Amino acid sequence: MARYPLWTMVMALAFMPEAGIRAQDPLAEMRALIKSQGEKLERQGKLLEEQERLIRQQKDWLEREITRENTRPPPSGAPEDGNRASPMPALSEADFAEDKTRLRESGLERKDHALRAYWGRDGRLIFRSEDGKFQAHIGAFFQFDYASFAVPSYVQQSLQTLSDFDRGLLSGTDFRRMRLRSDGLCWECVEWVAEMDFSRAADTTKDEITDPVPNVYLNNIYIGIRNLPLLGTLRAGHIKEELSFYCASSGRNFPFMERPMVWDAIEDPYIFDNGITLHRNFLDDAVYIWTGLFQTNTRTGAFTVSPTGAMAYDIRTCVMPILDEENQRWMCLGFSGSVRGNPYIRGIELPGSSVNVQPLIRAGTSQQVPSLVNTGRFFTKEGTQIISLNYNQSWGPLSLGAMYDGQWFNNSYINGLPRADGSLPSRVASVGDLYFDGFSIEALCFLTPGDHRTLNPKFPAYGQVLPVRNFRVLRGGDDLSAPGIGAWELTTKFDFYRGQFQVPDGAGSSKTRGGNLNAVTLGLNWFLNPNASMMVNYVYTTGLMGKNDPGPRDGAFHSFGTRFQFTF
Image 1 (cartoon, rainbow, N blue to C red):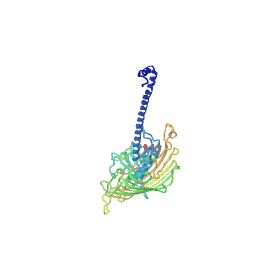
Image 2 (image 1 turned 180 degrees about the horizontal axis):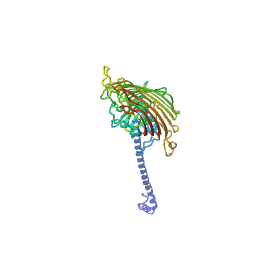
Image 3 (image 1 turned 90 degrees about the horizontal axis):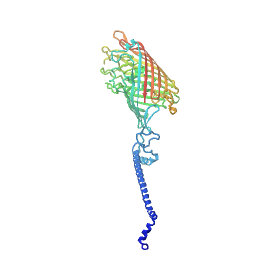
Image 4 (image 1 turned 135 degrees about the vertical axis):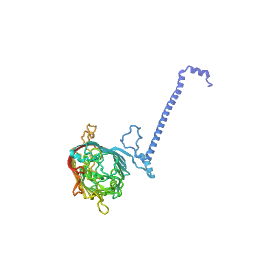
């Protein structure tokens, strides 16, 4: 600075403006660079904060997935819920390996029991865990019926009583069945069923032997244990008594609107009772054995009390020499037997029974449908014995079936029982050993190619009809949704029942109680898909029917009925 005076430097700057400007450029560039780097740092900070948030979210999600039962990601292709944010990305098994190893070594590893819902090919709503040890079905079904009759006046009069309910055969509509059901399997070996019927048209016995009729009928309600060594499956609760092939079959799968007449007369009063059962299959399902011990007179309300607590013992055996579902061929031969005590009649406290047969097409509540055959009340201390023989076979579209039922009431009386010393009170009369029986023969044939009746060998009974081509009007985007007509089936059946005996009138003669019936049924079934179906039945009924006083009369009448059914 000593070499150049201060004024010399000032003058130089004054006469060199461009040099002054260039001296200021590095400062401006530095400021711009600093500002740019600051913005980048700010953006990177925000990105780091977002990454930290995502890392925390993933960590929390991973910890929840490891510590709860759902440790596996949802299956690929599962539809997302449009009302929520997308879930965290699915993690692979490798991501869980370290944590699974740690949990397994500590003994805290937990399996995947989450239930996945799907609509099965059989039209049922199913919930099932990935390991198959937990599964549940929640569903319902209803049958909406219409019935009309062409009945001669003399037959109508013979079916009428002084009751406000029994006014003969009247046309009408009803919900024959309207049921809610839950069933399933938990922990691989424990099963349950809970099924209730809300229809007032349930075919209950119409006499004083039963307890008061409830508004809701309890059907199958039980708990079971599967795969017991030697024993098979154990069940306890309110259970269907498998007295025949038709009895074991669900009302969803009937080929006709009603079961056979002989079933209605003999097996119907005992279809559901409180009890305990065992069943098992042998020889690759070729042999089936079922047995049960029940308390009688617990059908509708699943409760009863009596001085003796009358019990019933049942056994059913089925042999299936042909079982080739792949080629639509099967055969089932069955035998059933039951030895049972008669329940005590309330107010009389004597063991009694009666036999009622209702028409094969019905309308109204169970109390509004008249009995075509009614033996009236009789008494015996020796209980009753029942046998049932069954034959059912299918060759592709054609199916045949036949059943025979017989029932004994030994040493029976009317109006009461003998005294302890063997003498008869006034009006009490012996009617001896009573035997009622009947049979049914049916033929079924599908008109649509590939459709057929199925058999459930684990529980020999009619299975569900699954149409090869569901009913559909419009063609969809793939071959499975091409137009179809559903499954069409022609049906025919012949029924016979005989349940009558002679009662002394005290004047040296006797009169007939009960009656006998013959019926021919023609039907057409249309299965739109596994869930929906329609049915049309025509029935011509003849026989000795009507009131016991002055006695049943020969008669005949025509019935026509339709049914709309939906089940899931």
